[in-house]
Length: 431
Image (cartoon, rainbow, N blue to C red; front, side):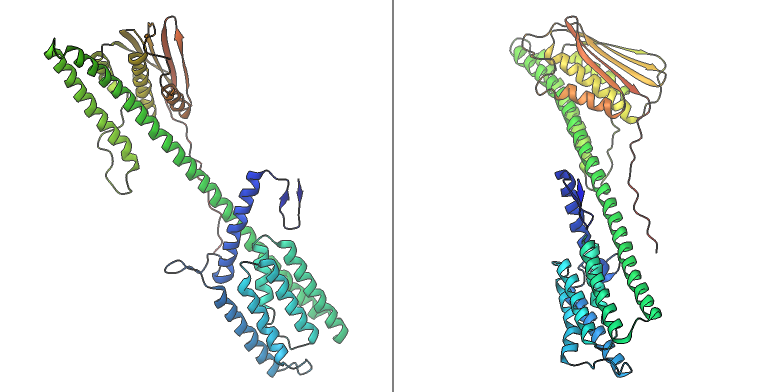
């Protein structure tokens, strides 16, 4: 990997080059804000920034009026201002109109105009404002080498012209050199602050994108768990109702009642999950997220589908963070759903064990696999994948696999969810 004079690397990975190019494009916007209205831009009202034409006009007026006033009040030994002198005073600001599209060309052009002005020997004054603006614009857009070369050439021309006409005068030359170095320092400080702000913006954008992705995955996982469980129960009860509709209408009615209750509960949970997408300021969810206190509901729903669940609690129950309780509930819910869909077993064991610093959940059935149930993962395998994602997000572990002819799911969850707060801090501004 090599580096050019502008601080850009050759041979960098494509992803890094794309990020660098985006940063440079943003730097050009920041450069415009610095040159047109200070470090934070000149955005007002509708958010539009000042036109480069307006900035060029202001600089042109300052150069022409200032130099004309200086020429009228001294420097009689200099070449008097003539049409060529005024044309050079206006040409520099005119080039600034293109500084956003062609920062290097504008920097070199304004330096060339300033050099021509010095060679002819016109009066000094605020004639280098356009040179300063062009230099700063090139530095802020990442073209440091071009800016420094243009600035150095202009200073060399000034030094040669001055020595040829007046000899070398240490105090004035050192003062000019100090002024030039001050301009360079200011440009570099602004560039550094611009880069820091851009890095912070990128870090914040990446964090917001990561949070959005995690929320999207969490919503998809919740919807899968709710719908897969409820639709499996509804499917079982619908089959029962169809079988008994003619021979045992009362039992068919019970199955239909179960379908109605299960579908109502599922709709309520779906609304609660989708409530996370509500617009800011709307009401919060009316019911809390499900936890271990609702395991009895899963037992009753499984019983209605023909699966007898033996629920056992070990250890001293302790208060659980909402994320841990929800994860344990969904793991049990998904495991029972898989048993109903894919196993011939009519019984299952659910064990919730409270241990020091952790919660262990075990769901097992004796099997065997149903002839029409298919693979244990079922469908696309989102159920087991969702369990692993939930457990991993909390810093726990999950194991799922065959146990004899049956199947077993074991999960270990910490009693405290990990702290994932990594909000990037904005760069400190000196105001």
